Amino acid sequence: MKIRNFFNLRDFGAGLWERSNRLQRIGIALGSILLVGLLPFAGASFLATPIASYDAVLVYPVGVFVLMALGLNIVVGKSGMLDLGYVAFFAIGAYTMALMGTHTGLNTWEIMPFGVGFAMLAGVLLGLPTLRLRGDYLAIVTLGFGEIVRLIALNSSWTKGPNGIANIPMPPDIGPLKFKLDDQKVFFWVVVIMILLTIWMIRRLSVRRPGRAWEAIRQDEDAAELMGVPTLKYKIWSFTLGAAVGGAAGVLYASKNLFIAPEMFTLNVSILILSCVVFGGIGNIWGVVVGATILGYLPDRIRFISDARLLVFGTVLVVVMNFRPDGLLPRKKREKAIVKREVSA
Amino acid sequence: MRLEIKDLHVHYGKIEAIKGISVVVNQGEIVTLIGANGAGKTTTLKTISGLRKVSSGAIMFDGQDISKVPAHERVDLGISQAPEGRGIFPGMTVLENLEMGKFHRKNRRHEMSEDLDKIYTLFPRLKERTYQAGGTLSGGEQQMLAIGRALMARPKVLLLDEPSMGLAPQMIANIFRIITEINKTGVTILLVEQNAQQALQRAHRAYILETGNVVKEAAAADLLNDPAVREAYLGTGAHS
Image 1 (cartoon, chains in turn cyan, orange):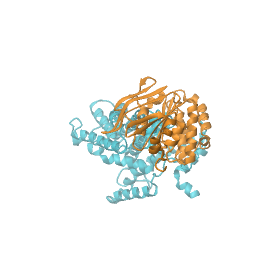
Image 2 (image 1 turned 90 degrees about the vertical axis):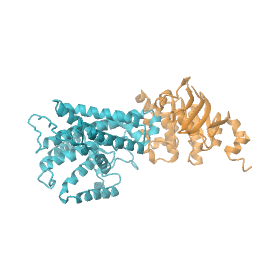
Image 3 (image 1 turned 180 degrees about the vertical axis):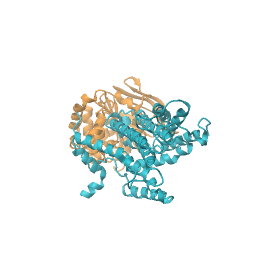
Image 4 (image 1 turned 30 degrees about the vertical axis):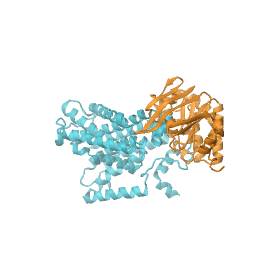
């Protein structure tokens, strides 16, 4: 019983959270944030990644994956739309940073709103005609969209085609905190802040009307429409918010990597991010964070076995999905649950 | 309140499912559409609630053509549907399901407790199950929940799609008794049913649909005693 409780980490965590009062909760939250913030200093421990620089791995893939997985989770987990072209928004953010960073004097933080804005615009433009589709059809359309964006980047002269764009400026220093290539702690902290902001946004929305509407749409779209939920509007909102997070991740990635090329934005990335969501626990924020962390980190941790690492990676996916088909930390299911809640009358 | 369907045509792709039917529902009535599988009953209902597009014809509600109004806005006008197959939200509790029924209401905060009381009086079983997930309810309870949820929107006309589907005979009788009760509180009801016997006993008027056409329209009591109807829909003709 106890072991089972511990094995079921989601219930274990939820229980711990439920039992705590407000002060303790703030303590737990701040403590976890501090621990995560100190992660870059743990590079000498067993966490160290051979070959790749530990700091850099924490930023990309780990941090950026977590951010993107959280964004994709709004679309796939919250409102139940299968988006296979999520990389497109990442690419739009990255190319916005690359083009504006090299052609204008604006710095990363000034470009960030543009990157997010363009990604959202793309989300609306793609969403308006296509979100009337459902399930498989939507998946195919988004898959196509992801490829279109990559092919445009590959074949246009203003994106420098397959050569990609180099010399993207780094973010300016924030006071004493300097962004450096060989020491990416500050990048990591920026990603953590973005992740926290995203989590905060999702949690706020989830308990309000949009959250209810998405939940209803995911469970039964026709019924939601019959309840007076403007389903198309809420689906576009969900899609656009997901796009915004993807765009933000893209801007940061370009500014960190200093160079981007179309080959970085293939279908593989979309699939990998979707795997993070499903692996961690579709629809559950903490599951998604854990899933993306593991899937981002693992390949670099075992890089010393070179090609065999992909085999290990695949095996982990297969094994975990077999034993925990709803992900590592599945979302609340309420099969037998009598939910504790006051009548909100 | 008056709901009037005029020469309605509806297509699924190239197949014409509704071939020009006209139906009138007056204030305070229970009107039933009966017919075999594929007659177009559910399609008609979905078209009234807005889930299916009208190919041609008009849906007049209170003198206004609503055939171009999106489904979620028709709820505001006072058309509420309990979907077929008890389309409740399985992962939400009974209470959350009922709250969803009020999603579009502007002053939902103030109406909530009053309407919850009303629904719980009508369906005491739902009150016992308040915090239970919708997906764990029995078929009959899910049907009650679907009807209750539709009522939360304070509809003028309630569209019911086969409320008796897959239920035990006792539960069917129970549901139909409640439908009559709801009607007595002033809600007009358009009922789609395969269980013609029960539907005709409860309804004021009835339309018989066959392959997308209205083949007969009459007072429900007359149809109950009509030999042709008895043979085709009430299943007593063949044995007598």
